[in-house]
Picture (spheres, rainbow, N blue to C red):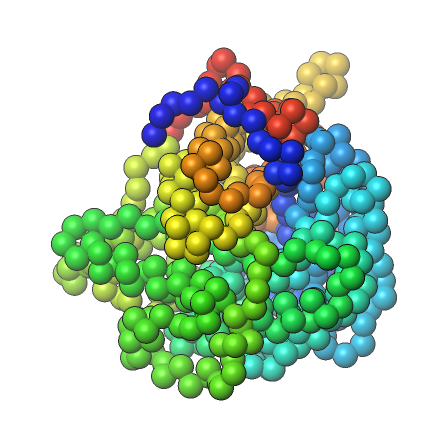
Length: 483
């Protein structure tokens, strides 16, 4: 790819430049004001599930520091803020009685954003399923999809006059395959058939929720879903077959029913030994296939696969924690290869060209459908420095370089004709990084977890300059550190 001069790259006025978070990762106040337990509360409190036994009980204490964080967003000139709503904060048991204090928090959040000129982008589900619903089967239970639709109606009626963009699900691949297949995410189950059942019920929940949101919203918002696309590279004999199988599980199991109204026949065939797909009922695909205004794209790294020879040790470098199960039901013959660096602190390779490739591919496959990059960012081992005068700083040149290179790649895709509507950096602030606890820092704002003090990193100032000028700022001369 060409080494473009980023100073020439300006984004159009309508292009959203924002930051993203998720409720369980930042809110804290886990047992306050009527919030019920979620599967992540249960999972993180189970010994051995998370790094150092970390939980989201306090996290970044956003629940108690809302106004401070809203002012922080305004200071960065953000166009938009992508947040998630905690289902168990609104409906503590997933169904039934609404918790007014829970809705009030999001009411104040949305109003606070609008008062500061920031567009609210609300995600209904970022993995915190009410534990009471998991107790009856969770996403393997069809009733959970209908409970989600009722939850969407409640939230739509409360906030549907002010939210600018609605997103139903964040990364249902993680919810289904990591939650029910590999055990790396809550609820921690390791059953391939359960994972595929969860795939379908998440798809169904998406479609039902879109219908409810359209019936309740009054301010003409946009509707979307966010998927974490796997950008696949194949190696060795049978590379195309390895890519095809993982593409079916990782990508097409969601895009095909949501955007085309059917499941890929090869997916059904590949997984026939795992499940008969009897959980797909008449009319389901029509319910799933709802009109969308935007397709959310989460991108962090590429994935390299090949067919396993069956004799050498099988490589499993798919970027996720190994908790005993597999997130790839029906494809044990595919192995995941280690990739060349540089890498982030998560061990994920840094490949901005993969983002450009993904955007161009989606633009082609889905006939110019409007796209928005809903997550892109990097974890590095940041260090807070405090000067003799008390001045606090976090110098993170590798993150600045990462953002610079990925935004330049996004701009190339935009210039090539992709209908790209925005970019959200992950994440606004350091947070609870799921199974990795507080050991990984993705934020452009540093959180001191002992004091909850916020310190904008160099990357926050860099991104703020981008948001203010709509031009990609240069990278400081000292350049990034390398692996």
